[in-house]
Length: 372
Image 1 (cartoon, helix red, strand yellow):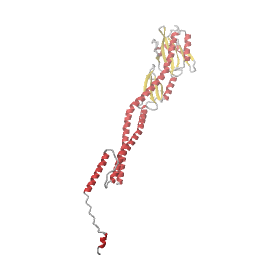
Image 2: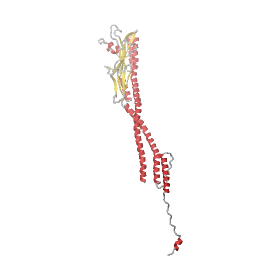
Image 3: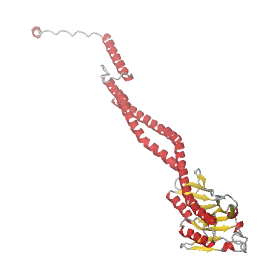
Image 4: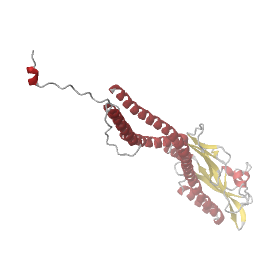
């Protein structure tokens, strides 16, 4: 009987532990699935939004030096409108490019053919800032044997357009420096008549280096394209399955920017965040299960084990004596057993046969007087 009690007692504990373990496994599986589907969508949206914000900041930082160079262009156009003396204009333009240390490395004034001298078709004032900071005047475009600068796209795109019009060329490689460049053009007017075009040529060498440094700093893959979708620069841009690509167009020059997370995909970040949420909750769940097992053991398994022991000890009679006050099924079981025990004791007493009287023994003195 002792062995049987031990088996039953251990069986209840094992069953409760197994039940709690199964419950934990099912809960984690269901909770993990729900967490992923509930958390994944807003987390993914937030991470994608963060990547879009980074793209916008990067686009703004790329645009800033290009737009700041428009101040140089407007200054050159204003000089063409206000300074009529060629020597004074020459000195002023040289000074502009000597003092400017931005990405505007060359530019000048391109008057309408024959507008300066009826005998001279081409009379541009074009300057280039060298790597040492010196400013050179270049007369190559004034060669009368050529068709002339006035047929170039950067010239015709703003001819007779309003004075505040700015046109951006395609990105091209300078044949002398072999550096990627872009040209901004604006018309200028004298006495209300179209007089020519002002230009600045912007070197993209430093800009490209800046983009790459930002991409490395933030672990981004970047592609910058011009208005014709030609690649200006690319850094660590790798397209993978289910990868999120942040795309936007920016600037008056209509460039486009594509950005990806180069090291960790958005999907990987989402999975890590969901995993961290689940790992943070699992220890809490384990503590809750341990506390639940303690309550089950304290208020269910332990009373039943005590009842089993009391029943075994009372198999020859007597009731179960256990301090259990909760008015539940276990209390009902104890009371019912005790009532049954009392009833059985009473019934046993009713049907118990009467005891036979014992024979009376003679006094000791009479036993000695009996004759032999």
